[in-house]
Amino acid sequence: MTPFETEQEAFWHGDFGNHYVDRNRGDKLIAANLAFLCKVISRTQTLNTIIEFGSNIGLNLIALKQLLPDAKLSAVEINQKAATELKKALPAVDLHQTSILTFQANKTWDLVLTRGVLIHIHPDKLPAVYDLMYQCAARYVLVAEYYNPEPVEIVYRGHTNKLYKRDFAGEMLARFPNLRLIDYGFLYRHDPNFPGEDSNWFLMEKRPTNC
Image (cartoon, rainbow, N blue to C red):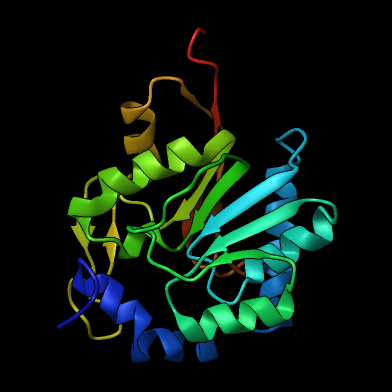
C-alpha cells in the first residue's frame, strides 16, 4: 500500500523520480536558471527568505544562492535521492523531505516558487497546494509551469495521469483577490543562449488584505 494520497506522489518518490534526477543536471541548466531568475529577481524587492516546492536536486536554489548569497533558502522535496543531492550541494538549506501535500509550515517566506511541479500534482489537490503557497508567501509567488488556457492532460514519457497543463497562475489570481500579477514570460527551448523548457512563468505579489 502506498503511503501517499495520490499516485503522482508515489510516482515521483520512486524509480521515475530517481531517473529524473539523473537526466536533469549540469552547468548549462544552472546557467539558464541564473539568466531566468536574475530577470525575476529584478522585479522584486528584498528577498531574504525563499522556499521552493519540489526543488529536486536544487538547480534553482543553487542559482538563487549565487544571485542572493545572504538569502536563507528552504526546500520541499519528495524524492530521497534528489533531497540527498540537494543537501550536499547546499548544506545550509532548510530541507523538508516530504510531499507538498503533507508539508506544514509555521512561518512565511519572502518568495515561494514552483517550477515544473504543479503540472505533476493531481488536479483535485491543486486548490490545497494553491492555499499552501499563498499562506507561505510573505510577499511574492513565482509559478513557472507549462501553460494552457484550459486544463488538459498530456502523456508524459509514456505515462498517463502524470502531467497536466493549465492556467495555474490565472487560477491563483482568481482564488486570491489580493494577489496581483507583476510580470510574466516564456522560456523557449530554442533560445540561442539559455534554452528553456517551453514553459511560462508568472511573478505575483501578495498585497496587504486591507488594500
